[in-house]
Length: 62
Image 1 (tube, rainbow, N blue to C red):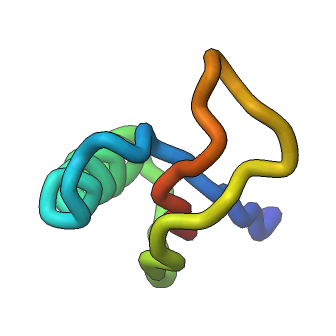
Image 2: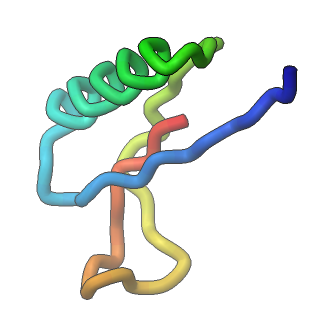
């Protein structure tokens, strides 16, 4: 089976607790579909390389 790595970027105006909840929900969804999730990491609020929908920052999660 191939190994994939995904980075999820969420809006900067939500709290880190909400980001954790979102990542947990996403992990549960992926596991329900048969995926294996090795680990998750929260990288924090970081600058985007370029603005997306007028946003310059985002919460990064692996």
